[in-house]
Each structure stands twice: as structure tokens, then as C-alpha cells.
Image (cartoon, rainbow over all chains, first blue to last red):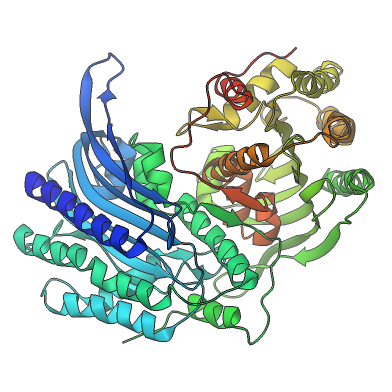
Length: 305
Length: 305
């Protein structure tokens, strides 16, 4: 499964980056290949791997878009093993996956994140992943399109439950100190196949369809909103909301923490952070404004389908 | 001690905010009073307190300056008690203090942070605090002034060790995933008086002198550098370095975590984040540049005195 999964995630990275370049039409991805070496205190190599990071900056549509592929292995600290498989000792691990975050320049176009991964820790093996959308202006039909697309895929796979994965997404992308969700959700699943009899091949089929379906899930929304006019007010609000994105990723995101703790490549992990961000003390929303309406939805997730 | 400490921290807040307003000359602090109520699952009030947050925005010198006073009490979660006093059960706590972060507009003027606090958890009582400087352009004489000022105060108090507190500051304000310290250090001390026979009054005298000395430690540097010219290059670098500030505060800072976990007022805690921040993928420094020289110092702390 390691070889099949990592080979697939590379293909998915290719497919997504090509489509994003075509959509942007101006900037191209730059690729960095990186390797990781894990050595014990005595200097013995204990693990390694590496990745293929692709970042597009200063595009006509995307202020920054990053798509990472990585495949790493080695020894995982006891604390992380306890969290992941409930065994409090160092275990061998393997992880491969593709992850992406796109930050459009225009506040009319939503930010998107997706991640699909395969993990082995000790004897346990599983897939995880998901995708979620973070708009700065709420276009309900876009949100419905996004969720409907995900539901359609889930409905085709017995092991997948759109309802459960949608709920897990709302729970995961939540900022308790703000009382807000990061965006309008999507799906999130983890430990798929770890503790039950799901056939790994069937789980893999689901993950493949999700990853290969990403373009059709997100890019039509970009096409629809990229030409819309906006002003300083919308841009300023986008920069403020990007601050929440940073807060989530640095305080809560498990992928970010896993990456930084297992000696992943910092620049590849933190390419998820937006290019320009602002924080304003005690920012207040105008009652009845478009921003207020968005916040209402971020505070109280809606069943879109 | 609770009353004496909280009363003093309010005075320190007044003294510092007056001096900063006078230095800025344009913008004034806006004050928000806030209260905190802690209720059990059954709705009983278990604790409370509040604070006095003062934030100055859009000044001639300070893009944002925040000075918080707070005084909170209640029940502290077992996990935090374990960390703070080594007892893994919920205990009553009390915390009061003043904390500040100033983000100047000009990259020629360094960012500064200071925090002075008094805590009680269960039977244990202690003071903590410190101050550290984050320049974007390295003026060695400013750094020496900052450290010399702190050393002079430490040298007057038997319980204080500049060498130890300077080292603790370098260790604390460190970003392992970057291999960089946040700035050029300062002093950091914690648990002062918690486990030894230090007389609380003597510890308090030291903390008072540190807090009241803050203006003379930092503001002369502002006066010296505020008039210097700078361009887009310096401003861009400042925004990038502010990204590191955000990474430290959200990933590592104990005060931020303590505040968010104990239900502190989010806007008061996160006023430490800079008003405008950027992240650039894989930013590279020019060899031999002023930025490279600064990074060298941030990567390998220097004994300035």
C-alpha cells in the first residue's frame, strides 16, 4: 500500500497543480525537492524520506497556492504514538500524502484547503484527509456546490458518510477562543480503516476519488467569482479573516503540529499561511452587513444539503 | 500580596501608557474594561476578575501598542496545575499582571514585549516576568543599552541574576522549527519565590523596579531611531519578521496559552499580534546584507555585556 499510495498522491499533485496553473493563467508553480534525514543521538540514520513542494506566488488569481507531496518514515515519539494509536512508546512510522492551501488574491474567491494522507504507525494503518472552504464573502450557491460535490462522492462509497464527515469537519476547524469555525466546512475524516475491517483497497478507492475530484469541487467556484469587482473594504476584511486562518493553523492544526514535531520541512509546512495578514484590535462588524452574515454562518454551521 | 501586586501593576500600566502616548505624540490609548466570569457546569460562579486593556493604533511611531492589566481568579484545570506547581488536580488560582507589546511602524525601531505577573496556585505563590527586544535592523549600541539597563537593575537585587535571566530569555524566545530566536533577548524569569525562601517582599521590590524601569529601557531607543529613513525593502523585511513573532506567540508563548485556556479575553491576549504581517515561501537572505547579519545574531545569541 505504501508504494501505491505515494505514487497516487504524486499523480494527484500533478493533476491539481496543472489545473491550477491553467486556471491562473499567469504564474507557474516552482518546485522544490527536499529530503529529510532522521538520525539517532549516536548519528545512525533512523529514517528519512522527503517531498516535492510546489508553490505558485503572485498569480493573477492566486496570491499564493501551495501543493505539497511528501513521503516520510522513521521513529515516532512516544507522545505522538499515544495520540495516534494509543501506545505510549516510540514506534516506526510511515506517512505519505498530498496537501494544499490556495489563497486567492480576490476576497470574492474563497480560500481552500485539502489534504489526503496514508499513515502507518507500528502495526496500524489508515487513511485520513478532507477538504474545507473558507470564503470571505458568502455566496450560498458556491457553498452548496462544494458540499454537494463532496456528498456525491461519499454516497458512492459504503465506508464513507457525508453526514459524519461533514460534522467532523465542522468540529475540527473550530477556534474555541473565537467561538468561530474557520470556514463553511466540507468533509474531514481520519483513522479510516485503522480499527475496523474496512478493506484498505476500498478505503483507498474512496480517497482517490476525493483527491481526483478536488478540481471539480473547487475550480468552478474560482471561475465564477474571479471576475467580480471588490474594494478596499472587502480586501481589508479578507486580511483580517486570514488572521483567523493563521490562528487555526498554528494553534490547532494537527497536520502542522505533526509536521513540525517530526522534523518536516518548515517552509513546506508553513506554506499554508497566507502571504499577507492583518490583525485589528477588537474589530467590530456592522450589523446587517455581508460580513455579519458570513460570521453568523461561521459561528453556527449550517446543513447545506 | 494580591492587593499590593495588582495595585502596583495598575500603576505601572498608567506610567507606561502615559510615557508611550507622550512619545508617540499623535495617537492615544483607547481603554476597554472587561470582566470575566467562570461558572461550573451547574452554573455556579467559580471565579472571575477582569482587566483594563489599553490599545493605541495608527500612531506616528506605533502602528499598534497594547498594554494590558488583568486580575483573574478561579479554578485552574488539572493539566495546567501539573505544569505550574506539579500537582495534577484542579486548584484555586489567582493571577495579576501587566503585559505589553509595542509594534512600531518603522522597521528601524524595534518591537518590544514586557510582562510582569504575580501568581498563586493552590499554596504556591510566585512572580514572573521579563522583557525582550525584537529589532528588524541591528543597531548594536541599542542592544547593549537594553541589556545594560536590565543588568544594572538585576545587579541591585541579590535574588536576581542577569546572567541566568538573560540565558532563560534566550532559551524561552526560541523557535525550534526555524532555528532562530525571536529577537536579541533581554531577561526572563519565572517561579521567583515559588520554591525557595526568598522573601516575597524582596521579590516584589525587584519586579517593581523592573516594571518601572521599562520606559528608560526602551523609549530612548525609540527616540534615537524614530527619525531614520527606510524604504520598501526594510518594511517588507519587518513584515516577514513579524510572521516569526506570530509563530512564536501562537505556537509557544505560555502567557498566550495560559490566557486562552483560562478563558481570558481573546482580544486582550491577541493584541500582541502585529497589525500587518507577511509570509513569503522560502525567503532567502542576501549574503552579507544587514538582514543576514541580524539573522546571524538571532541564530546565535551574543553576550552583549
